[in-house]
Amino acid sequence: MNRSNRRNYNGKILALTLFAVAMAYLEAAVVVYLRELYYPGGFTLTMPGMTEAMLTVEMLREAATLVLLIAVAFVAGRLSWERFGYLIFVWGVWDIFYYVWLKIAIDWPATLFDWDVLFLLPLPWLGPIIAPILVAILMVIFGFLITRLQAAGVRFRATGVTWALAIIATGMILYTFMRDYGALATGLAPKDFLYSVFLIGWLFYIAAFILSYYKIRRQRGVSIW
Image 1: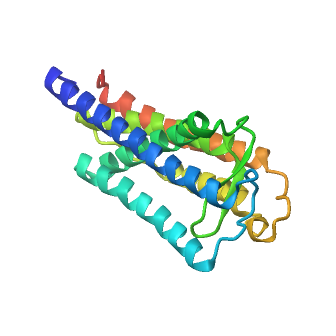
Image 2: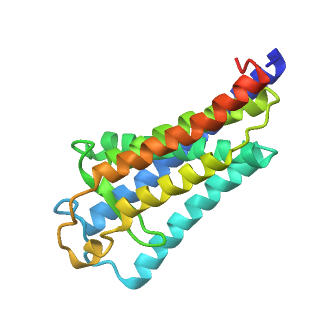
């Protein structure tokens, strides 16, 4: 990668990181307000007092968050894989700093194994905080490496095996998050989290990325630094 491309890329990554960190603060601030309104006695995995209309507003807010992430990635990149790389990079940074800001603002979570309502679309996602954080870490690393490769003039390409592993991994991880979605409405304790299933899916993500990334690096012999 030449000096000009490296400078442009580093500036773009810095700007996207600042965007994700600031967006994470806005998201955390909204959650602080919601918890003050609906969970004054302490957070639990229920939705006490939240009307159907308010639940719809909250779901649309989450959808709007996804639109923001997709839009900034679309503007940052030119090609499909480049945009995807920027998307998962920004998403990962946002997700990590969301919990950082919550810890700073309200000293929550107490540990990374505390449970949270992770997402509401298309069904509620429930699980320990360490799970989405582990996924977010991979998103940041993979997004950075994909876009860095693109900035060096090499297009990222996924192999058939990569696609298969990634699809299986996504299914396994989403299953661990959504298999007990009804616990949110009933107020009952959720089932034990399937750490083994989650970790297998997480490792499949790593394997999927390595298969494509290092194959491209070997074939092109390009320096991304």
